[in-house]
Image (cartoon, rainbow, N blue to C red; front, side, top):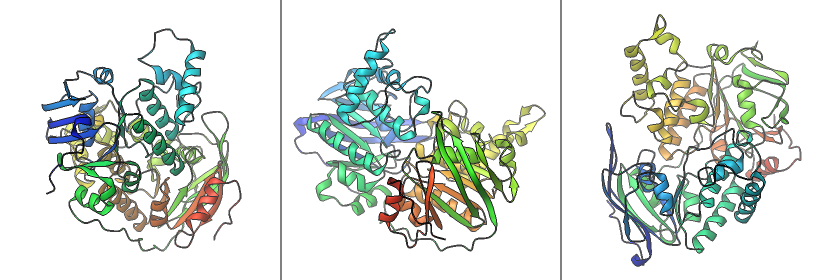
Length: 513
Protein backbone atom coordinates (compact mmCIF):
# COMPACT_ATOMS: atom_id res chain seq x y z
CA UNK A 1 0.00 0.00 0.00
CA UNK A 2 1.24 3.45 -0.89
CA UNK A 3 1.67 5.64 2.15
CA UNK A 4 0.44 9.26 2.27
CA UNK A 5 3.24 11.66 1.49
CA UNK A 6 3.87 15.16 2.73
CA UNK A 7 3.21 17.92 0.17
CA UNK A 8 5.83 20.40 -0.86
CA UNK A 9 6.07 23.72 0.96
CA UNK A 10 4.20 22.52 4.04
CA UNK A 11 4.26 26.03 5.48
CA UNK A 12 1.82 27.04 2.73
CA UNK A 13 -0.86 24.48 3.56
CA UNK A 14 -4.36 25.93 3.63
CA UNK A 15 -6.17 22.71 4.63
CA UNK A 16 -5.05 19.89 6.92
CA UNK A 17 -7.38 17.03 7.85
CA UNK A 18 -5.66 14.81 10.38
CA UNK A 19 -6.72 11.30 11.43
CA UNK A 20 -10.40 11.89 10.60
CA UNK A 21 -12.87 9.21 11.73
CA UNK A 22 -16.59 9.18 10.95
CA UNK A 23 -19.00 6.29 11.47
CA UNK A 24 -22.64 5.92 10.52
CA UNK A 25 -24.91 3.03 11.62
CA UNK A 26 -23.36 -0.06 10.07
CA UNK A 27 -20.81 1.90 7.97
CA UNK A 28 -17.32 3.27 8.70
CA UNK A 29 -17.11 6.12 6.19
CA UNK A 30 -13.73 7.59 7.24
CA UNK A 31 -11.09 5.57 9.07
CA UNK A 32 -8.21 7.86 10.00
CA UNK A 33 -8.14 9.86 6.76
CA UNK A 34 -5.31 12.32 6.12
CA UNK A 35 -5.55 15.18 3.61
CA UNK A 36 -3.28 18.19 3.03
CA UNK A 37 -4.01 20.88 0.43
CA UNK A 38 -1.61 23.66 -0.55
CA UNK A 39 -2.74 27.25 -0.88
CA UNK A 40 -3.22 28.25 -4.51
CA UNK A 41 -3.53 24.70 -5.82
CA UNK A 42 -6.21 22.52 -7.40
CA UNK A 43 -6.21 19.26 -5.45
CA UNK A 44 -8.04 16.16 -6.70
CA UNK A 45 -9.78 13.89 -4.20
CA UNK A 46 -10.21 10.48 -5.82
CA UNK A 47 -11.81 7.17 -4.92
CA UNK A 48 -14.67 4.88 -5.81
CA UNK A 49 -18.24 5.60 -4.70
CA UNK A 50 -18.37 4.77 -1.01
CA UNK A 51 -14.65 5.44 -0.50
CA UNK A 52 -15.48 8.26 1.93
CA UNK A 53 -14.82 11.33 -0.24
CA UNK A 54 -18.19 13.06 0.20
CA UNK A 55 -18.26 12.32 3.93
CA UNK A 56 -14.78 13.79 4.38
CA UNK A 57 -15.72 16.92 2.44
CA UNK A 58 -18.99 17.27 4.36
CA UNK A 59 -16.88 17.31 7.52
CA UNK A 60 -14.66 20.04 6.10
CA UNK A 61 -17.76 21.99 5.00
CA UNK A 62 -19.41 21.76 8.43
CA UNK A 63 -22.26 19.46 7.38
CA UNK A 64 -20.98 16.59 9.57
CA UNK A 65 -18.88 16.59 12.71
CA UNK A 66 -16.03 14.06 12.85
CA UNK A 67 -16.08 11.41 15.55
CA UNK A 68 -12.41 12.20 16.09
CA UNK A 69 -9.53 13.92 14.34
CA UNK A 70 -8.58 17.51 13.67
CA UNK A 71 -9.45 20.08 10.99
CA UNK A 72 -6.92 22.87 10.43
CA UNK A 73 -7.30 25.89 8.15
CA UNK A 74 -4.21 28.02 7.65
CA UNK A 75 -2.60 26.05 10.53
CA UNK A 76 -5.41 26.98 12.97
CA UNK A 77 -7.65 24.20 14.42
CA UNK A 78 -11.39 24.53 13.78
CA UNK A 79 -14.52 22.77 14.99
CA UNK A 80 -17.48 23.56 12.76
CA UNK A 81 -20.99 23.26 14.16
CA UNK A 82 -22.66 23.88 10.82
CA UNK A 83 -21.93 25.03 7.23
CA UNK A 84 -22.26 28.67 8.31
CA UNK A 85 -19.25 28.22 10.59
CA UNK A 86 -17.28 26.72 7.70
CA UNK A 87 -18.25 29.58 5.39
CA UNK A 88 -17.15 32.07 8.03
CA UNK A 89 -13.77 30.35 8.00
CA UNK A 90 -13.66 30.61 4.20
CA UNK A 91 -14.73 27.07 3.23
CA UNK A 92 -17.55 26.61 0.71
CA UNK A 93 -18.85 23.41 -0.91
CA UNK A 94 -20.63 22.85 -4.21
CA UNK A 95 -22.56 19.64 -3.57
CA UNK A 96 -23.18 16.93 -6.13
CA UNK A 97 -26.90 16.97 -5.36
CA UNK A 98 -28.15 20.50 -5.89
CA UNK A 99 -29.39 22.52 -2.90
CA UNK A 100 -31.51 25.10 -4.64
CA UNK A 101 -35.11 26.36 -4.43
CA UNK A 102 -36.92 25.83 -7.75
CA UNK A 103 -39.46 28.63 -7.23
CA UNK A 104 -36.75 31.25 -6.61
CA UNK A 105 -34.87 33.09 -9.33
CA UNK A 106 -31.20 32.47 -10.08
CA UNK A 107 -30.17 35.63 -8.22
CA UNK A 108 -32.37 34.83 -5.21
CA UNK A 109 -30.83 31.36 -4.92
CA UNK A 110 -27.32 32.79 -5.11
CA UNK A 111 -27.76 35.43 -2.39
CA UNK A 112 -30.09 33.38 -0.14
CA UNK A 113 -28.75 33.42 3.40
CA UNK A 114 -26.20 36.15 2.74
CA UNK A 115 -28.46 39.11 2.01
CA UNK A 116 -30.95 41.21 4.03
CA UNK A 117 -34.52 39.94 4.26
CA UNK A 118 -35.60 42.74 1.94
CA UNK A 119 -33.50 43.15 -1.20
CA UNK A 120 -33.59 45.23 -4.35
CA UNK A 121 -33.98 42.57 -7.04
CA UNK A 122 -32.71 44.82 -9.80
CA UNK A 123 -29.50 45.67 -7.94
CA UNK A 124 -28.92 42.06 -6.87
CA UNK A 125 -29.49 40.75 -10.38
CA UNK A 126 -27.04 43.33 -11.72
CA UNK A 127 -24.38 42.29 -9.20
CA UNK A 128 -24.95 38.60 -9.93
CA UNK A 129 -24.75 39.22 -13.68
CA UNK A 130 -21.45 41.05 -13.20
CA UNK A 131 -19.98 38.22 -11.14
CA UNK A 132 -21.24 35.57 -13.56
CA UNK A 133 -19.65 37.46 -16.46
CA UNK A 134 -16.37 37.79 -14.57
CA UNK A 135 -16.08 34.02 -14.13
CA UNK A 136 -17.58 33.06 -17.49
CA UNK A 137 -20.62 31.35 -15.96
CA UNK A 138 -23.47 32.31 -18.28
CA UNK A 139 -26.85 32.43 -16.50
CA UNK A 140 -29.82 34.79 -16.51
CA UNK A 141 -30.08 36.18 -12.94
CA UNK A 142 -33.81 36.86 -13.24
CA UNK A 143 -34.82 33.47 -14.59
CA UNK A 144 -36.76 31.06 -12.30
CA UNK A 145 -34.54 28.17 -11.32
CA UNK A 146 -37.08 25.49 -12.30
CA UNK A 147 -36.67 26.51 -15.93
CA UNK A 148 -32.94 25.78 -15.96
CA UNK A 149 -31.24 22.64 -17.25
CA UNK A 150 -29.10 20.56 -14.89
CA UNK A 151 -25.93 22.10 -16.33
CA UNK A 152 -27.22 25.61 -15.71
CA UNK A 153 -28.19 24.70 -12.14
CA UNK A 154 -24.63 23.52 -11.53
CA UNK A 155 -23.40 26.98 -12.53
CA UNK A 156 -25.77 28.54 -9.99
CA UNK A 157 -24.31 26.32 -7.25
CA UNK A 158 -20.79 27.45 -8.15
CA UNK A 159 -21.85 31.08 -8.16
CA UNK A 160 -23.39 30.68 -4.68
CA UNK A 161 -19.96 29.82 -3.26
CA UNK A 162 -18.18 32.51 -5.25
CA UNK A 163 -20.69 35.09 -4.00
CA UNK A 164 -19.55 34.35 -0.45
CA UNK A 165 -15.88 34.80 -1.43
CA UNK A 166 -14.82 31.39 -0.15
CA UNK A 167 -11.04 30.92 -0.14
CA UNK A 168 -11.37 27.12 -0.10
CA UNK A 169 -13.78 25.68 -2.67
CA UNK A 170 -14.90 22.06 -2.56
CA UNK A 171 -16.36 20.90 -5.88
CA UNK A 172 -18.10 17.52 -5.64
CA UNK A 173 -18.34 16.09 -9.19
CA UNK A 174 -18.78 19.57 -10.71
CA UNK A 175 -18.43 18.45 -14.32
CA UNK A 176 -21.03 15.68 -14.42
CA UNK A 177 -23.67 18.04 -15.83
CA UNK A 178 -21.34 20.13 -18.00
CA UNK A 179 -20.60 19.84 -21.70
CA UNK A 180 -16.96 19.34 -22.82
CA UNK A 181 -16.66 23.02 -23.72
CA UNK A 182 -18.11 24.01 -20.33
CA UNK A 183 -15.56 21.72 -18.63
CA UNK A 184 -12.78 23.58 -20.44
CA UNK A 185 -14.27 26.90 -19.30
CA UNK A 186 -14.50 25.64 -15.72
CA UNK A 187 -10.86 24.55 -15.82
CA UNK A 188 -9.83 28.07 -16.83
CA UNK A 189 -11.97 29.56 -14.07
CA UNK A 190 -10.47 27.26 -11.44
CA UNK A 191 -6.95 28.04 -12.60
CA UNK A 192 -7.59 31.78 -12.25
CA UNK A 193 -8.95 31.19 -8.74
CA UNK A 194 -5.91 29.13 -7.79
CA UNK A 195 -3.59 31.80 -9.19
CA UNK A 196 -5.40 34.31 -6.95
CA UNK A 197 -4.52 32.20 -3.90
CA UNK A 198 -7.69 30.13 -3.50
CA UNK A 199 -7.45 26.41 -2.77
CA UNK A 200 -9.75 24.10 -4.71
CA UNK A 201 -10.60 20.50 -3.83
CA UNK A 202 -11.84 18.77 -6.97
CA UNK A 203 -13.77 15.49 -6.63
CA UNK A 204 -14.14 13.60 -9.90
CA UNK A 205 -14.13 10.10 -11.36
CA UNK A 206 -13.02 11.34 -14.77
CA UNK A 207 -9.29 10.79 -14.67
CA UNK A 208 -8.63 12.64 -17.93
CA UNK A 209 -10.18 15.75 -16.35
CA UNK A 210 -8.17 15.32 -13.18
CA UNK A 211 -4.93 14.99 -15.16
CA UNK A 212 -5.67 18.13 -17.14
CA UNK A 213 -7.01 20.33 -14.34
CA UNK A 214 -5.39 19.39 -11.03
CA UNK A 215 -1.93 19.94 -9.53
CA UNK A 216 -2.00 17.18 -6.92
CA UNK A 217 -4.21 14.26 -5.90
CA UNK A 218 -5.12 12.27 -2.81
CA UNK A 219 -6.68 8.82 -3.23
CA UNK A 220 -9.10 7.21 -0.77
CA UNK A 221 -10.10 3.56 -0.73
CA UNK A 222 -12.53 1.97 1.74
CA UNK A 223 -12.44 5.04 3.97
CA UNK A 224 -8.65 5.29 4.19
CA UNK A 225 -5.96 7.38 2.54
CA UNK A 226 -3.90 5.15 0.24
CA UNK A 227 -1.93 7.95 -1.44
CA UNK A 228 -1.55 11.58 -0.47
CA UNK A 229 -0.52 14.69 -2.44
CA UNK A 230 0.58 12.88 -5.59
CA UNK A 231 2.01 15.28 -8.15
CA UNK A 232 -0.13 15.07 -11.29
CA UNK A 233 2.82 16.00 -13.50
CA UNK A 234 4.52 12.71 -12.59
CA UNK A 235 1.50 10.42 -12.03
CA UNK A 236 -0.35 8.78 -14.93
CA UNK A 237 -4.01 7.76 -15.11
CA UNK A 238 -3.29 4.03 -14.90
CA UNK A 239 -1.56 4.51 -11.55
CA UNK A 240 -4.47 6.60 -10.25
CA UNK A 241 -6.98 3.98 -11.40
CA UNK A 242 -4.94 1.21 -9.76
CA UNK A 243 -4.84 3.11 -6.47
CA UNK A 244 -8.60 3.76 -6.61
CA UNK A 245 -9.74 0.19 -7.29
CA UNK A 246 -6.78 -1.78 -5.95
CA UNK A 247 -6.16 -3.54 -9.28
CA UNK A 248 -5.10 -2.75 -12.80
CA UNK A 249 -7.94 -1.25 -14.80
CA UNK A 250 -9.35 -3.03 -17.82
CA UNK A 251 -10.20 -1.30 -21.04
CA UNK A 252 -13.91 -1.79 -21.79
CA UNK A 253 -14.57 -3.71 -24.99
CA UNK A 254 -17.48 -2.96 -27.24
CA UNK A 255 -20.26 -5.47 -26.43
CA UNK A 256 -21.33 -7.82 -29.19
CA UNK A 257 -24.32 -6.56 -31.13
CA UNK A 258 -27.64 -8.24 -30.47
CA UNK A 259 -30.12 -9.21 -33.18
CA UNK A 260 -32.95 -6.65 -33.03
CA UNK A 261 -36.54 -7.84 -33.04
CA UNK A 262 -39.86 -6.07 -33.44
CA UNK A 263 -40.35 -2.36 -32.57
CA UNK A 264 -41.18 -1.91 -28.86
CA UNK A 265 -40.99 1.90 -28.65
CA UNK A 266 -42.04 4.13 -31.52
CA UNK A 267 -42.37 7.92 -31.66
CA UNK A 268 -44.29 9.55 -34.50
CA UNK A 269 -43.94 13.29 -35.17
CA UNK A 270 -43.71 14.03 -31.44
CA UNK A 271 -43.49 17.63 -30.19
CA UNK A 272 -43.61 19.20 -26.73
CA UNK A 273 -43.21 22.52 -24.92
CA UNK A 274 -40.44 23.12 -22.38
CA UNK A 275 -40.61 24.79 -18.99
CA UNK A 276 -39.92 28.20 -20.54
CA UNK A 277 -43.03 28.09 -22.72
CA UNK A 278 -41.20 27.49 -26.00
CA UNK A 279 -40.79 24.29 -28.02
CA UNK A 280 -38.41 21.87 -26.34
CA UNK A 281 -38.40 19.51 -29.32
CA UNK A 282 -40.46 19.10 -32.47
CA UNK A 283 -41.40 16.48 -35.05
CA UNK A 284 -39.32 13.72 -33.46
CA UNK A 285 -39.80 10.30 -35.05
CA UNK A 286 -37.83 7.12 -34.47
CA UNK A 287 -38.29 3.57 -33.24
CA UNK A 288 -36.36 1.26 -30.92
CA UNK A 289 -36.57 -2.46 -31.50
CA UNK A 290 -36.45 -5.34 -29.10
CA UNK A 291 -32.86 -6.22 -28.28
CA UNK A 292 -31.13 -2.93 -29.03
CA UNK A 293 -29.82 0.15 -27.25
CA UNK A 294 -30.40 3.43 -29.06
CA UNK A 295 -28.35 6.35 -27.76
CA UNK A 296 -29.43 9.99 -27.75
CA UNK A 297 -26.42 12.32 -27.95
CA UNK A 298 -26.40 16.08 -27.67
CA UNK A 299 -25.35 19.07 -25.63
CA UNK A 300 -27.51 19.56 -22.52
CA UNK A 301 -30.61 21.65 -23.09
CA UNK A 302 -31.47 20.48 -26.60
CA UNK A 303 -34.68 18.67 -25.71
CA UNK A 304 -33.35 15.35 -24.43
CA UNK A 305 -34.71 15.73 -20.89
CA UNK A 306 -38.14 16.84 -22.10
CA UNK A 307 -38.26 13.97 -24.60
CA UNK A 308 -37.62 11.43 -21.85
CA UNK A 309 -40.30 13.06 -19.65
CA UNK A 310 -42.88 12.85 -22.47
CA UNK A 311 -42.17 9.16 -23.06
CA UNK A 312 -42.50 8.53 -19.31
CA UNK A 313 -45.80 10.46 -19.17
CA UNK A 314 -44.46 13.20 -16.92
CA UNK A 315 -44.88 15.93 -19.54
CA UNK A 316 -47.72 16.30 -22.09
CA UNK A 317 -46.99 16.32 -25.80
CA UNK A 318 -48.32 18.99 -28.13
CA UNK A 319 -48.63 16.69 -31.10
CA UNK A 320 -47.61 13.27 -32.30
CA UNK A 321 -47.88 9.83 -30.74
CA UNK A 322 -45.98 7.39 -28.52
CA UNK A 323 -46.42 3.64 -29.10
CA UNK A 324 -45.27 0.73 -26.95
CA UNK A 325 -45.38 -2.70 -28.55
CA UNK A 326 -47.88 -1.36 -31.06
CA UNK A 327 -50.25 0.18 -28.48
CA UNK A 328 -50.81 3.95 -28.36
CA UNK A 329 -49.81 5.16 -24.88
CA UNK A 330 -49.75 8.90 -25.67
CA UNK A 331 -52.64 9.75 -23.35
CA UNK A 332 -52.27 7.20 -20.56
CA UNK A 333 -50.88 7.90 -17.07
CA UNK A 334 -47.30 7.19 -15.91
CA UNK A 335 -48.62 4.40 -13.66
CA UNK A 336 -50.33 2.67 -16.55
CA UNK A 337 -47.18 3.02 -18.64
CA UNK A 338 -45.25 1.33 -15.84
CA UNK A 339 -47.72 -1.54 -15.77
CA UNK A 340 -47.40 -1.76 -19.57
CA UNK A 341 -43.67 -2.44 -19.19
CA UNK A 342 -41.96 0.99 -19.17
CA UNK A 343 -39.03 1.76 -16.83
CA UNK A 344 -37.75 5.32 -16.42
CA UNK A 345 -34.39 6.35 -14.95
CA UNK A 346 -34.48 10.20 -14.80
CA UNK A 347 -31.36 12.38 -14.84
CA UNK A 348 -32.35 14.10 -11.56
CA UNK A 349 -32.18 11.05 -9.32
CA UNK A 350 -32.82 12.77 -5.98
CA UNK A 351 -35.34 15.32 -7.25
CA UNK A 352 -37.45 13.20 -9.62
CA UNK A 353 -36.41 9.57 -9.23
CA UNK A 354 -36.32 9.37 -5.43
CA UNK A 355 -38.02 11.06 -2.48
CA UNK A 356 -35.31 12.57 -0.20
CA UNK A 357 -37.50 12.66 2.92
CA UNK A 358 -38.50 9.00 2.72
CA UNK A 359 -36.49 6.02 3.91
CA UNK A 360 -34.45 3.68 1.74
CA UNK A 361 -37.18 1.05 2.04
CA UNK A 362 -39.98 3.47 1.18
CA UNK A 363 -38.09 4.57 -1.94
CA UNK A 364 -37.43 0.98 -2.98
CA UNK A 365 -41.17 0.11 -2.97
CA UNK A 366 -42.48 3.33 -4.55
CA UNK A 367 -43.48 1.64 -7.80
CA UNK A 368 -44.88 -1.54 -6.21
CA UNK A 369 -46.23 -0.20 -2.92
CA UNK A 370 -49.71 -1.53 -3.69
CA UNK A 371 -48.27 -5.03 -3.61
CA UNK A 372 -46.79 -4.41 -0.16
CA UNK A 373 -50.12 -3.59 1.50
CA UNK A 374 -52.58 -5.45 3.67
CA UNK A 375 -55.73 -3.41 3.40
CA UNK A 376 -54.80 0.30 3.54
CA UNK A 377 -51.52 -0.31 5.38
CA UNK A 378 -48.00 -1.15 4.18
CA UNK A 379 -46.75 -4.41 5.69
CA UNK A 380 -43.37 -3.40 7.11
CA UNK A 381 -41.83 -6.89 6.98
CA UNK A 382 -42.89 -7.40 3.36
CA UNK A 383 -41.59 -3.98 2.30
CA UNK A 384 -38.26 -4.54 4.09
CA UNK A 385 -37.86 -7.94 2.44
CA UNK A 386 -38.45 -6.41 -1.00
CA UNK A 387 -35.96 -3.60 -0.31
CA UNK A 388 -33.35 -6.06 1.00
CA UNK A 389 -33.64 -8.06 -2.21
CA UNK A 390 -33.10 -4.92 -4.33
CA UNK A 391 -30.13 -3.84 -2.22
CA UNK A 392 -28.48 -7.26 -2.42
CA UNK A 393 -29.07 -7.90 -6.12
CA UNK A 394 -27.98 -4.48 -7.32
CA UNK A 395 -25.02 -3.96 -4.99
CA UNK A 396 -26.36 -1.02 -2.96
CA UNK A 397 -24.13 -0.26 0.02
CA UNK A 398 -26.48 0.75 2.79
CA UNK A 399 -26.57 0.33 6.54
CA UNK A 400 -29.98 0.97 8.08
CA UNK A 401 -32.63 0.37 5.40
CA UNK A 402 -35.05 2.37 7.53
CA UNK A 403 -32.75 5.39 7.39
CA UNK A 404 -33.18 8.35 5.03
CA UNK A 405 -32.38 7.82 1.36
CA UNK A 406 -30.41 11.09 1.33
CA UNK A 407 -27.75 9.46 3.53
CA UNK A 408 -26.60 7.25 0.64
CA UNK A 409 -23.72 8.28 -1.62
CA UNK A 410 -24.50 9.34 -5.18
CA UNK A 411 -23.46 5.99 -6.61
CA UNK A 412 -25.62 4.03 -4.20
CA UNK A 413 -28.58 6.32 -4.85
CA UNK A 414 -28.24 5.50 -8.54
CA UNK A 415 -27.89 1.76 -7.95
CA UNK A 416 -31.08 1.73 -5.86
CA UNK A 417 -32.97 3.80 -8.45
CA UNK A 418 -31.83 1.63 -11.36
CA UNK A 419 -32.51 -1.55 -9.41
CA UNK A 420 -36.03 -0.44 -8.54
CA UNK A 421 -36.81 0.47 -12.15
CA UNK A 422 -35.39 -2.70 -13.69
CA UNK A 423 -36.79 -5.10 -11.13
CA UNK A 424 -40.03 -5.83 -13.00
CA UNK A 425 -38.35 -7.01 -16.23
CA UNK A 426 -39.53 -4.03 -18.31
CA UNK A 427 -39.91 -4.24 -22.08
CA UNK A 428 -38.87 -0.61 -22.62
CA UNK A 429 -36.17 1.21 -20.61
CA UNK A 430 -35.67 4.98 -20.83
CA UNK A 431 -32.38 5.85 -19.10
CA UNK A 432 -31.32 9.51 -18.86
CA UNK A 433 -27.70 10.07 -17.75
CA UNK A 434 -27.72 6.72 -15.89
CA UNK A 435 -23.97 6.70 -15.12
CA UNK A 436 -23.49 10.40 -14.34
CA UNK A 437 -21.26 10.94 -11.31
CA UNK A 438 -20.40 7.27 -10.80
CA UNK A 439 -16.96 5.78 -10.34
CA UNK A 440 -15.37 3.25 -12.70
CA UNK A 441 -16.94 0.23 -11.04
CA UNK A 442 -20.32 1.94 -10.69
CA UNK A 443 -20.36 2.93 -14.36
CA UNK A 444 -19.59 -0.62 -15.42
CA UNK A 445 -22.29 -2.03 -13.12
CA UNK A 446 -24.99 0.22 -14.58
CA UNK A 447 -23.81 -0.36 -18.14
CA UNK A 448 -23.88 -4.13 -17.58
CA UNK A 449 -27.45 -3.88 -16.29
CA UNK A 450 -28.54 -1.99 -19.40
CA UNK A 451 -26.79 -4.53 -21.62
CA UNK A 452 -28.57 -7.32 -19.73
CA UNK A 453 -31.88 -5.61 -20.48
CA UNK A 454 -30.99 -5.39 -24.16
CA UNK A 455 -29.87 -9.01 -24.30
CA UNK A 456 -33.08 -10.15 -22.64
CA UNK A 457 -35.11 -8.48 -25.39
CA UNK A 458 -35.92 -5.04 -24.00
CA UNK A 459 -35.74 -1.83 -26.03
CA UNK A 460 -33.37 0.62 -24.32
CA UNK A 461 -33.18 4.37 -24.96
CA UNK A 462 -30.07 5.86 -23.38
CA UNK A 463 -29.51 9.61 -23.09
CA UNK A 464 -25.95 10.59 -22.21
CA UNK A 465 -23.59 13.54 -22.59
CA UNK A 466 -20.63 11.13 -22.53
CA UNK A 467 -20.03 10.49 -26.23
CA UNK A 468 -17.41 7.81 -25.53
CA UNK A 469 -19.97 5.89 -23.49
CA UNK A 470 -22.57 6.08 -26.25
CA UNK A 471 -20.07 5.03 -28.92
CA UNK A 472 -19.08 2.02 -26.83
CA UNK A 473 -22.49 0.87 -25.62
CA UNK A 474 -25.16 1.65 -28.22
CA UNK A 475 -26.32 -0.15 -31.36
CA UNK A 476 -27.60 3.03 -33.03
CA UNK A 477 -26.94 6.66 -32.20
CA UNK A 478 -29.26 9.65 -32.70
CA UNK A 479 -28.13 13.25 -32.26
CA UNK A 480 -30.46 15.98 -30.98
CA UNK A 481 -29.72 19.67 -31.48
CA UNK A 482 -32.17 22.53 -31.15
CA UNK A 483 -34.97 20.09 -30.33
CA UNK A 484 -34.57 18.25 -33.62
CA UNK A 485 -33.06 14.86 -34.43
CA UNK A 486 -30.17 15.90 -36.66
CA UNK A 487 -29.13 12.46 -37.78
CA UNK A 488 -28.72 8.77 -37.07
CA UNK A 489 -25.25 7.22 -36.90
CA UNK A 490 -23.73 3.78 -36.68
CA UNK A 491 -21.51 4.02 -33.56
CA UNK A 492 -19.18 1.34 -34.96
CA UNK A 493 -18.21 3.43 -37.99
CA UNK A 494 -19.14 7.09 -37.32
CA UNK A 495 -16.35 9.53 -36.48
CA UNK A 496 -16.41 11.70 -33.39
CA UNK A 497 -15.95 14.76 -35.61
CA UNK A 498 -19.01 13.91 -37.68
CA UNK A 499 -21.15 13.40 -34.59
CA UNK A 500 -19.75 16.51 -32.95
CA UNK A 501 -20.70 18.62 -35.94
CA UNK A 502 -24.27 17.35 -35.71
CA UNK A 503 -24.33 18.14 -31.97
CA UNK A 504 -23.04 21.69 -32.34
CA UNK A 505 -24.38 22.98 -35.66
CA UNK A 506 -27.74 23.42 -37.30
CA UNK A 507 -26.62 21.59 -40.42
CA UNK A 508 -28.70 18.49 -41.06
CA UNK A 509 -26.54 15.40 -40.76
CA UNK A 510 -27.07 12.59 -43.20
CA UNK A 511 -28.98 9.78 -41.48
CA UNK A 512 -27.55 6.31 -41.72
CA UNK A 513 -29.99 3.49 -42.17
